[in-house]
Length: 503
Image 1 (cartoon, rainbow, N blue to C red):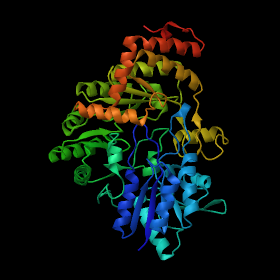
Image 2: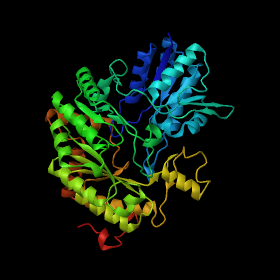
Image 3: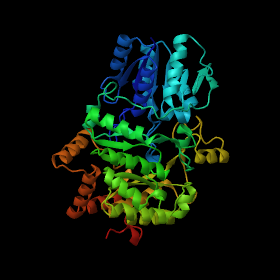
Image 4: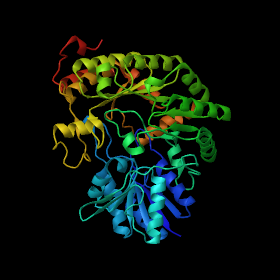
């Protein structure tokens, strides 16, 4: 019986530690195929080399797979490349301990498989849906068959890519993706920080955002899962773990809108007591019926990908909605009292000081004073995204490694530093504006303390409400004004206009 060792390489814990949902799906598929599986979750490891060597020695795998979630933090101006750490902590120790086939996979590999094989000096990668791709690869390795046409496979040798199959797409997404979390990870460690169970209601994305790689990873069409299977999976995993915090991790939860509503109706029929959230709400598909269903189903908060509040900028981002849709979504979310994190992305094609100012005005109006606004400055160009392709056409030398290491898009009429100054100014005036990642790095003990306090007081509010409260307290005590003057001194103050004076 073939043995596969799976390693979760993601060690990032902001804004909370993320359960290796995708790797658990792969483990489930491998187990169903009759393989022996061991998943080593390195998220909380204090000695990755020790844990990897121990797993290889005791399990004696035939194949080792490394799941890689992120290439970098994706934060534009303040981006941090993460693959150096993955190489040092995971890939190199694994290569030293294991002489058999090593294959990399995961969302990051779906973007830049060939460049990542070069970076790690490895031979195999799979891209697309990992479940069928890994199962077929392990079967062929066990049978000593050629891997050249294995689904989703990318093969490197002699310092170059030898074979690259199209991304693999699962034929069946209705079979439960995960049967059990406890078989593969210690979910209690994640629960300590209120990390949610992740659920997909579909894969793929039919939208055309200029910076996005979702459709490169999952495909250009929506592949919808059966709604009853989705809610059965939620019921099973929440019952197993005792975790009531569930996050929908679709590219956009509410597009197509009818499918999202069907999932919510099925959840309501189950009568489960859950704290639901979604990382992807699109302003173009927010209506009263959707929010009524979300509230009834148990949504505690949502992330809304507005990205901008200016029509010119939204057009440059390739969005399918306008500023009026953003304002309407904000009004409805406030009316239904669903806490919302608003995501902004500054530095798009056509960005100017005026579009930045307009966008901030629109979003602060839409979000109100008690919802979180996360502002990212600078757009990271990833391989295959429309913005990266336009940069390559303008300058074929814009990236030496096919956009593996961070390359930022720079708008023509404003610098990223000028954008940051405008956003920082707004941050002093609005305590709910947080600049990513500058204001989002919280020690783990502080996260755990916040979760503990919320549980003690029986609150269903998201943890970020505490941080807005602290910022408001700083304003009342005058600390915010002191920080403002110190900021002006560091940035060659004083204020250059009435706009830069705190009220």
